[in-house]
Image 1: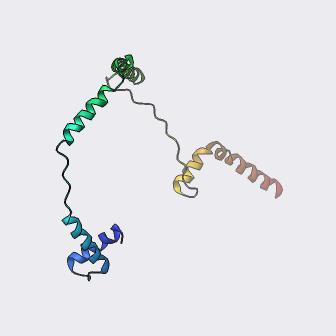
Image 2 (image 1 turned 60 degrees about the vertical axis):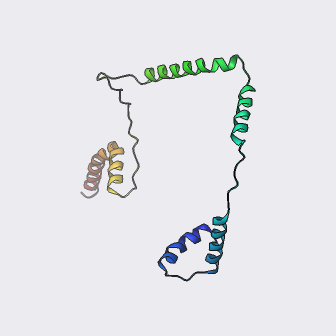
Image 3 (image 1 turned 135 degrees about the horizontal axis):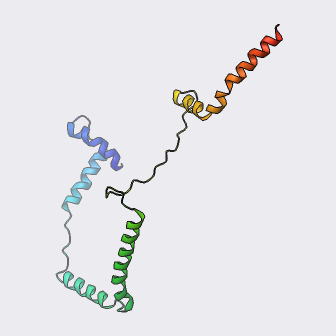
Amino acid sequence: MTCNQIRELMPDLAAGLSAVTFEMKDFRQTMNLLDEWKVPEASSYFDVRLRARLHEEQANQPEGWLQWLRRPALAVSFAVLIAVGVTLFPKGETGQPAAPATTQVPVAAEPGTAVGDLQALDKNHELYSDFDVLDDLQVQQDVNANP
C-alpha cells in the first residue's frame, strides 16, 4: 500500500465510514513497533570529538596568498557590478530610473475573428485603398461591353 492510498483512506477511517482492511492492520502494527523503538544515546564524547575534527580540518586548509586575495577581490567585484549597474540604468529627469523603451510585438489573432479581421485590414490598408480604382474600372468595362 502506498502513502497516497493511505492518505485517501484516513478520512473514511476517522469518520468510521469504512471497515478496517488488512493493510490498515499491518500499518497499525508497523506504527506500534515504531512507537516502541528507543533512540540510542550518542556517546558522551561526541561533541568533543566533533570539535577536534573541525579544528583539524581548519588547520589543514592551505594558508596561501589566494586566501588573502579572495576578500579584496570579492569587494572589488561588487564595486564593479555596482558601477556597471549605475551606468546601464541611467536616471531620467525626475530622478527615477528611465523607463526602458518598449516595443509592442503584434499578436496574431485567429483569422475570422473581429481582431483578426481588423489586423488584416490594417496590414493591407494600401491594397484595399486601391479597390475603389478597380471597382471603377469594372464599371467602365461593363458599360463598354453593353452599349
